[in-house]
Amino acid sequence: MTWNKKKDEAHKPADDAAQSSDTKHTGTAQTTGKGHPTPKRKDAQAQNLHPLVPVDRKASAKAAKARIRAKEDAQYEAMRTGDINNMPKSERLPWRVYIRDYVDARFNIGEFFVPVAVIILIASMVMSVTVRNVWTTIVPMVLLYAYLAAVIIDVAVMWHKLKKKLIEKYGEASVAKGTRSASYAWSRAIQLRRWRLPKPRYDKRGHWPE
Image (cartoon, rainbow, N blue to C red; front, side, top):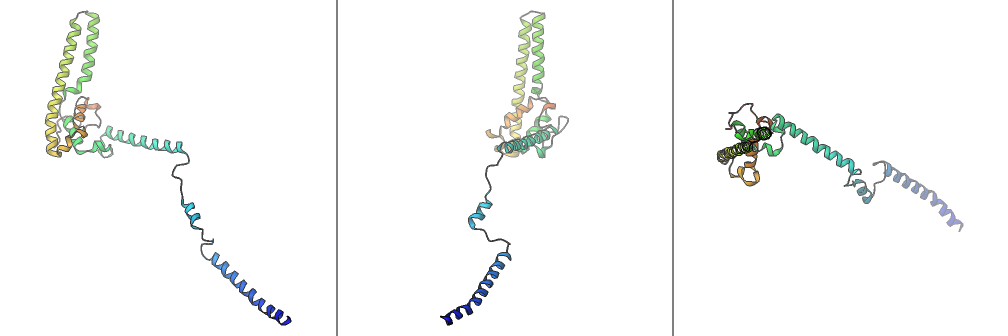
């Protein structure tokens, strides 16, 4: 037993040295890399996850509305100043630019319809009170409807010519139902020139599109 005890004691320092060496080796491996142990895959994936829904929904919605409003204001300003590069995409379509230039180049009877209608109605009311005659009501209404008929004829003639030019230049797609080219042309034709949006590219009539 004495011999075995001495043998165990002789091996003990070697075992302790080996353990000390392993400990130093392990400690070096833990600190020589990133400075911390490598995280588990689940922990790493959990750290990379981001919430899909913002924390403050009201603030996010408010910011989104502000961005949309700023974009709309910029587009309106572009139409008011005639800056075609910053207008909405629908206003930058080549056949819409052509329609605007064509309508703005001609004299349109319909662009004075609103002021003429207001003048006729006011005159009819004044005359009906002062003169008190049935004709003071009938005559203004006849004049108003005659003017309206002239506007309709003028718009129809304008669109008939413009439609042919659009088809020749841009094809049938430019006058298809989905493009609303006809309504776009006549709605511009019955507006006063200075109130039209987008703003006419030329200050005076007569600049026909090529």
